[in-house]
View 1 (spheres, helix red, strand yellow):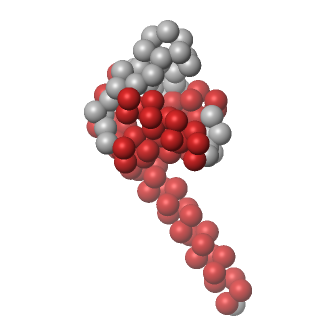
View 2 (cartoon, one colour):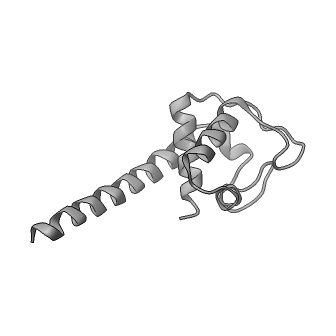
Length: 105
């Protein structure tokens, strides 16, 4: 019984963390100007969020890179239309980046 308890607790914690990230990331996305240029499945001005998730592996390096692009803006990866800097904190940018990359799970 004890051998099963730890894996079950660990799995439950991982699932609840993923669910919390999805709720926090989506709520943050909806509260910021992201949706003016990015939709879930459709390219608008910038790529769809799912296109971004498909392009980049979900790892610390890509999370940091996307968080930087979200916070400070970027141009060139998806064409010549610049992504402007966004009014987000480092923590919010990281939450958004993690959420976007989780959309490919």
